[in-house]
Length: 195
Ligand SMILES: Cc1cc2nc3c(=O)[nH]c(=O)nc-3n(C[C@H](O)[C@H](O)[C@H](O)COP(=O)(O)O)c2cc1C
Image (cartoon, rainbow, N blue to C red; front, side):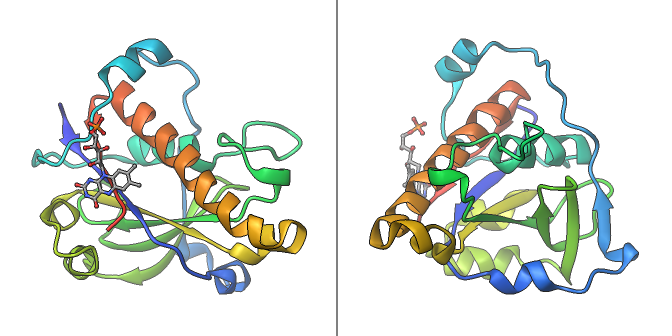
């Protein structure tokens, strides 16, 4: 196992992120996702486990690119994404809390699927505070990277009413499983944290 990253779940409204003014120096282009891997899907399913122990290695931008792409990357000219979405309404928003990533300073970033890039939102190491919000789980503090999956409920609720909220929760599961499997194929450990 090379190192460990961590998947963390949070539900909140994040509509404001899409209207942020973005300077060029706030953007980090990610390398294109690789479409061939070392392991088959069957092997990744067989090997997948939740991992909470951490190596000291850093992640790199290729890892970040692949993991974000697997969760919400655009995989079709029509704008369809890696994980299924009820009505293709895509309520999920991904945030990256970076701690130890080569080529990316510690901070909080928003993933923009359309351009496969990161938008810098805040500087500093937020992992300790995030761990505290996750009932003090130390894996959150120690992971080189924490992926926060949030949802804008109203995107789904506009069409599906109350069911839309449930659909958003289901979609988080789809995206998270993709991240689990993608991490496994790269020799990375991950755990989904619901707390
Ligand atoms: C919705 C959900 C919430 C979870 N929350 C946590 C958590 O807060 N902390 C943690 O260490 N693991 C958490 N897990 C991981 C489970 O503990 C883990 O999947 C389970 O022990 C089975 O092990 P496996 O994933 O290796 O098959 C969560 C898993 C799911 C699906």
